[in-house]
Length: 102
Image (cartoon, rainbow, N blue to C red; front, side, top):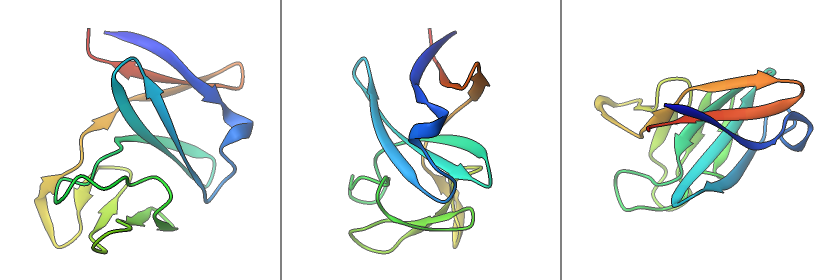
């Protein structure tokens, strides 16, 4: 597994999200109180982007149908067995690094 630079930390102020593309993977980054979380930027329901959805605390609502996900786990709040894929995040030297599979 390797860490890939996604953006600078300052590009994701607390309480916001940012879409990034790393290779062929679309990722939504979320800053929750200074902690950054990464989810696949696709709602498991219909594929809508999760970035730009209403972020309230650690919960983001899908812009298309309102499905609400915990960005710290990727889990759908009403059915935790349904989840968006998550990626580990490391902050180093003010850079947001995302761990991708091999």
